[in-house]
Image 1 (cartoon, rainbow, N blue to C red):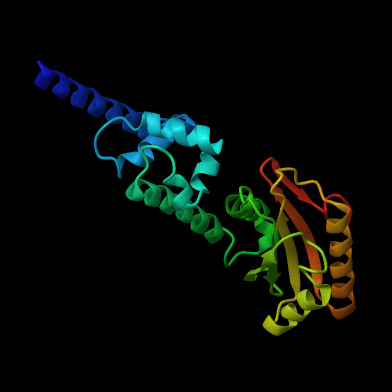
Image 2 (image 1 turned 135 degrees about the horizontal axis):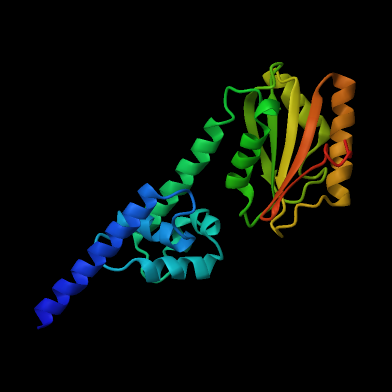
Length: 232
């Protein structure tokens, strides 16, 4: 009887996995709920058994699918049911997503691929728990030649000095740049310090022939363009 019960559970688990696979392949982009997509991703590392409880625990613990995929391996392993292989598997998915979105903006005019750029920045920065400052340096064709990680911390002259930003442009032959940073609070609205440092860098750029196209602030709820707000 116990043997039959075990066989039935195995069969049911196999059937569930097959149904998820069919929905994934045959449905549209919303065919699977977030936790179901996590379930499917976990199949590769957890070869037998029900991955639904683990997937739901991950969503509950981190708050969303994107937060799960942006979590560090060590943090993933703290969730019950997650081993090294399953944590590494989810981390690999996150790295693949970053490289895919980066590939959409490389070797293309950034201003003509603006949504692809925003997608790349959101995947990479929206769920960071620290404030990170980056400068995207562009050539005369507005193609990305360097994605420079300036540092972590509040965006002010202690973290990002206008003279150093423009000097870097000269060093690598860039003629334009886009400032980027994130707000870990989730709200991308610019602070007074954000506006002031942007205007100082833009003014330094005007004096030295380096165009500051924009300053994009990334939050979990979206992004804000200082150019669109008329602040540059």
